[in-house]
Length: 137
Image (cartoon, rainbow, N blue to C red; front, top):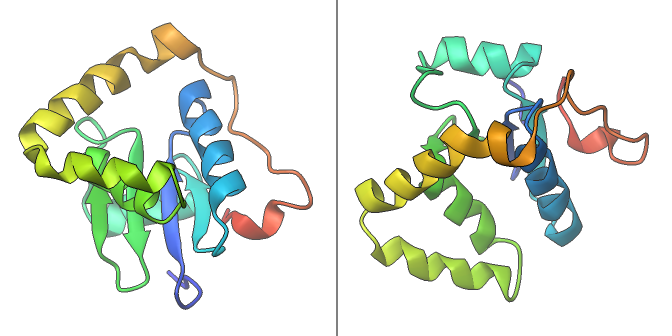
């Protein structure tokens, strides 16, 4: 995987409306241009899933991939992303004091219900021409 230097890749569920809204939220607040994106369903997403033997039954909504190949999942990934988004979003890092098994229980509850609550698309989001450079396909 050729991730540009000093970038992190957010893998997200490309058909989930909540996930797509979250990607738009990150794009608007990523002032350091740190993040790139790809859908879990994309070729790049599937390659990372296969290379790292990720169980998509247990993790099917967000993964943070760093240039060193380090992966973060679920609430840890979300909080690591929030840390870089500036005030007030970066204040969410206080939730790191909550043990991961509790954070991930809440995360999994939302993830299990995301399609019912927010809906689902028929296909993955197609980035606009001005945002295309932020996406790996």
